[in-house]
Image (tube, rainbow, N blue to C red; front, side, top):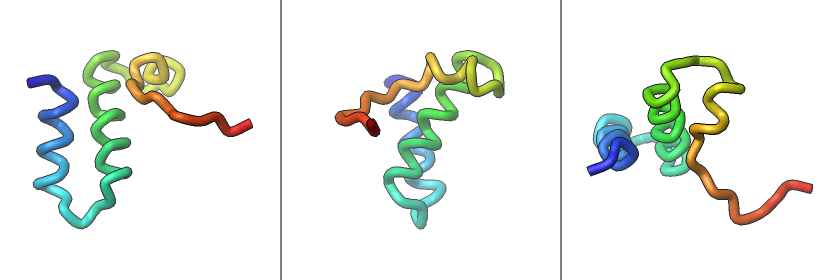
Length: 57
């Protein structure tokens, strides 16, 4: 089981009142922090594993 799945599952059970999109974002941020061991946005951005289906141009 990957870190992503473990963290997402624990957030779902611990914060049931939070929307699914916020669960996903919080799980992705937590995984990025655990992988990079930093709180700097420029360091966390490459670790953020999200694929957007569209672009905001």
